[in-house]
Image 1: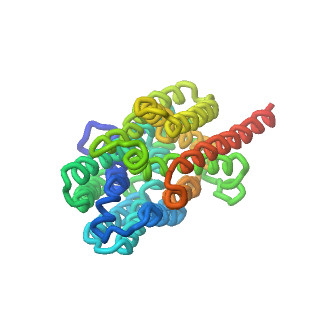
Image 2: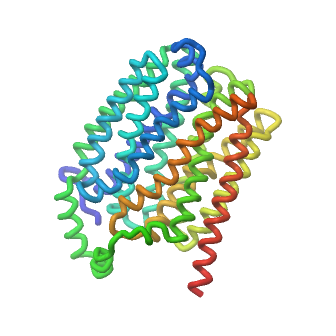
Length: 421
């Protein structure tokens, strides 16, 4: 499995890790760029747009993203990762440019749906690549490195948007132009690095003849993905857990900058830097806990449950903090323990428990459930804000979902252990 890319001394799987990390950076620079600039977007479009309508920008993006998960996963299995990724990122680039030229909120909505459809090509392709190419004993840690691109991109997007648009008063469209440039660079990298289907098939065939697990691989290849396997109790509760995890994260990512500015007195670039603490704190958390999960491979469920419960506590601390120092401590610890820290372990657990054939489809279903929350959370929190004048209830809903989802996942895996005994 250590075949190297032609003309390079670096293993192919290591190049895949770097490439996919950069892909998440690009996606998340775009995703996080607009929320700090909501007031500027509102002003540029006439100044009479509600919080619900602004939150609907994120909902439109995630609607497109969610809609693509299962189709993209199916296409990954049928035609290959490269043939799904490249057209998806072309659509993503066109969408970011459309948003940069928007003269109405409806045009931004349209561009956001299109961007979501384009980005929806990435998840199934990315984690099919990691599942297929990364050695098992390095998978959680390598997936954490890939996922850290989400944190880096989110932090960069928040900071650049707050600094350039809010503080230096550049047009909010500047962030879309930056996104387009990054997308073009990623397209070039995808074309240059990712193997096509034929090369993948040849590589896997060679691997199967060399590796000791060839017999196991042959057996697995005879399996067929079925609805029963995709929605077994164990898998279903994993989907619910991921829904809750994503709900908390995307509610926070979408509305935290606005919450800090309108309800906690933060100003200018301080909003972006404070909000980005969640993203940046998640990088050491993801690397640390995924390394532990690789070391103690049979303790993944325990890691997941503890991290999820602790993340819920930190989110509660954030919203109930009576001073800015306590609030920032809560944000840092939520980032360290939350979605981006636990996600690599969940994906690694999924890789061990999901059907091995049709992994793209399985990942598509898994991410579909998780990302459904991202369609609901931004608009629901905006509606709560319009109705109550505060976004605090959005945080409390996230905490409740995290606790409930984690409890269900724990129960499903406790039952499994009892059955095994």
